[in-house]
Image (cartoon, rainbow, N blue to C red):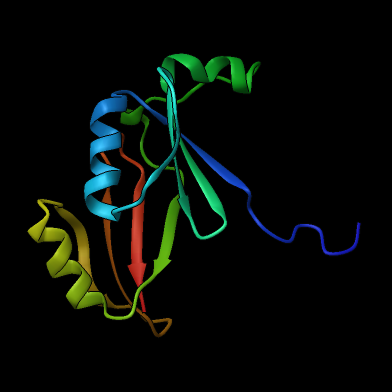
Length: 127
């Protein structure tokens, strides 16, 4: 298996409110919808599909594992490179997004800020 893994094809995020999540991703990321049905909405970031799947449909996908609830706390962070962290923070707050933290300089040499989507998935921007 030469070159394995070489990319992430899709990330599926479990969401409680598909309409609210879709509206958030359209407004905040400005991504076009590439697929949609009653249970999911799919966007594309670069070559990676971001699938927002209703939590009620998630059990079938991950059985016998159980779907965690939002109040259990975050278990991952998605990081996006941006050209200018402070400018992007201003844009995000202008869109009504509440930052969890930042912008701040991290000890490992990058400037970051974080926010979450309506289902509690955390996104970090950094440069």
